[in-house]
Image 1 (cartoon, rainbow, N blue to C red):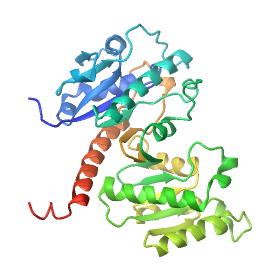
Image 2 (cartoon, rainbow, N blue to C red):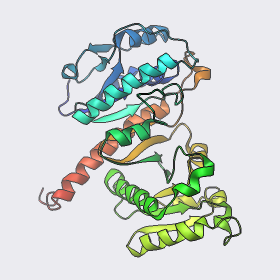
Image 3 (cartoon, rainbow, N blue to C red):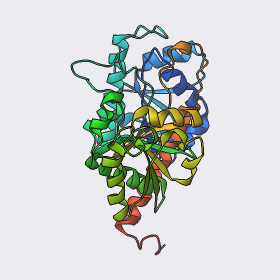
Length: 346
């Protein structure tokens, strides 16, 4: 039975030599997933049928050539290309990177046009996607250019949310990137996302220090005293519940993170190492701050197990569920923000 207004989930297939196609197949082999959404895989029916045979999957595809043919209650595969592709599981291949970008670009185009409601991206290889036409460190930076807003990598799980002041930046350059303006932008993005995407009306946010021991009063660097502390104080005086900077080495081990709705880390590994240690397999990468919703699993291409049928689809499933939940919450938030009496009048 078809459902009206089913949320359409666009899916970019990721690196075809990695585990992306496998976790997509495993996710939608369970027909109950079709009660929650209508999936649209941006790839080709030819390549998805290859993966179906390789993994002995019983999944059924609805093969389409246009977004106008998307059908509820089916696993739709939209033909972005029709030629055959040489698959070598576990190998990095520049040509395979080109197909990953073809899939991504087509899915983002559909997202912008509103023919899909949310986007879930399978893992890519950041090296083999680079070209003269596509020169971005990853999904987040590309989406920031394509969509409206200021993107922020927001790692989310049931009990922990971690945002980043800087993401794909060399560690040696981190302090030069962090300014009062950046602090304000990222904190505003996190705060707004917690309100509209997670239904937390008064979010409490922790900020991790740039230097060990928050600089030890200038002994180990002065960036925390000269940039972070003044910025946090200004933001708190404006009514934001933001605290720190906290020394990162003990913040997670002491479970201090459980006192906050979100944590803002100064750089990539400072936030993602503890996040993945605590939540691995249950985490989701959410691109906050944009007018459209994109999520992805919290792992990479996993070349070492690609093609073996060993990949765990849990994180991809959670990414899909998260995208659907965020879409619904944001829709409600926007509705009630425009007309706060609407809910009361029902």
